[in-house]
Image 1 (spheres, rainbow, N blue to C red):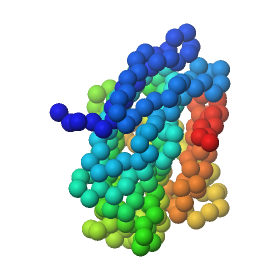
Image 2: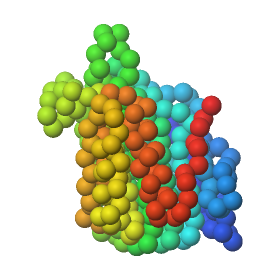
Image 3: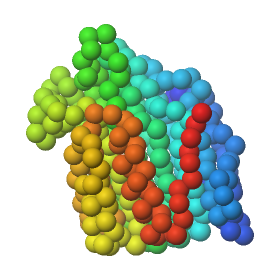
Length: 274
């Protein structure tokens, strides 16, 4: 059995229109802070915390998140995921999420920063029932290195598997290995340094919303490129290449706002962490 550096298990349910924890467990180098209710909608926000301040050689992390019918939750982190050099063994994090019908989960971690000689692998497995809604973002940011090289990490590998009613609907795999790939070329980072991804699953998805998101992003005056695609299951994905974390965060925040206004008639709460 794997000796986990940190484990976290969180189960949430709806009680009279308010989402509350049914079960909370954590040990090691993962913790969850007390629940926060940003408004009177009943949706809860939890901040995930790594008290060690960063991921080190050979670290292993596991999270399990279960959202019951009708529950609504935002999960975010207290700060960026910082992966330092891993001379002997890579860092691994796996997350398993289950969403019952009528539930809504926003999983919005802060950026992943991979420093020189960092080797990081992440796997998210999401099981969704018909009628649930899921919104996820991630941002890959190169960390500082003594040489000044923007791509000094060994490997970053992000895998997302999304199942709808037990059938695989999305398999998203990003693997960046600078020593084996020319990351500045077409098909990789194309001259940019930061990569952002957004995946949204929901029955409310339609072409009108995608057209609006496309026009909104196209109208942002800054140096970036993006792509937007419908998925094989109800939902869509967005990729953004840019040269700063803040720009990608701003783009995703605008998309997030448009989505929640259209689908739920609400505006996302501020997740400021200072």
